[in-house]
Amino acid sequence: MIVFHYDKTLEGLMTAVFDAYNRKSFPDLLLGMQEHEPLFVDESYTVITQDESSKRVWKGLEKKLRANALNMITHVWLSELSGSDMLIFRYIRKVFDSQISIETNFADEDVLQMQKIALKVSREKQRVIEFVRFQKAADDIFFAPISPKHNCLPLTLYHFTDRFADQKWVIYDTHRNYGYFYDLKKVTEMTLENTDLFPDGKLNEDLMATDEKLFQNLWRGYFKAMTIKERINPKLHRQHLPRRFWKYLTEKQ
Image 1 (tube, rainbow, N blue to C red):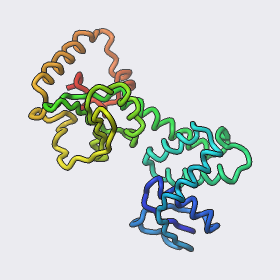
Image 2 (cartoon, helix red, strand yellow):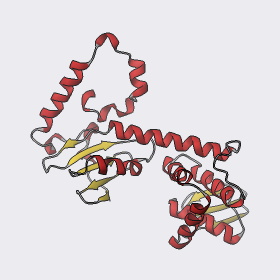
Image 3 (cartoon, rainbow, N blue to C red):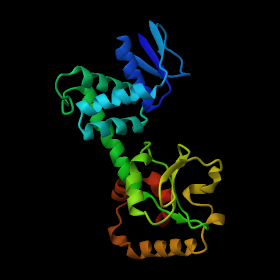
Image 4 (cartoon, rainbow, N blue to C red):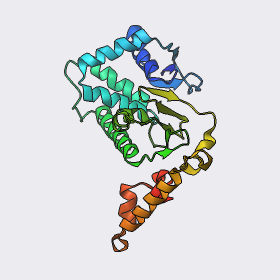
């Protein structure tokens, strides 16, 4: 068994692909830098992430794949599912080794799995777009905590910068402890040291704007008034609005 250790970044994974072809030795298993190796390892290699090597692999993929397939690689990486990095590695190797396009070869198990996982991440991205609820802080910045199943927050930035281009906002992934701040000009990745700003999925009341509670009460009143009790279907409701998002929704408080 051949094991590659890398830094668990997408650039590191691309470098691993480059090094594998350069060494003519391909890994059976990819591990993080500090992860323990299994028994009976024949060869162990540590990948040092190189921007130039990573870019060369990506440019090679751009020549072989259409934009949708490149996006699929990014989506699978952001899924954070166990073994997804090795799946991407095998997929990339098949792309480079094949004389014809493998993008729609769903008879290949790796191609099929890439498609399925990318679809799951895409659906989660859409849920984030639908279920984000901004809360206005005293400094006129709008905050929105969220905790998606997959690391799909980067995939939503285009939507939010386009839809809310005229206001400052922060969208924060409470599970992964990072987020993005939009200052009316650009988006910057950020990390908060104090995670108590979002108790129970809501902005701390001490930090809310004076009229935020009023608007929240108005929205809850509207939501209640529009509900037709005779048509309540809890099973269908949970299907379209997963319970794990409820704590972030004003109308569910």
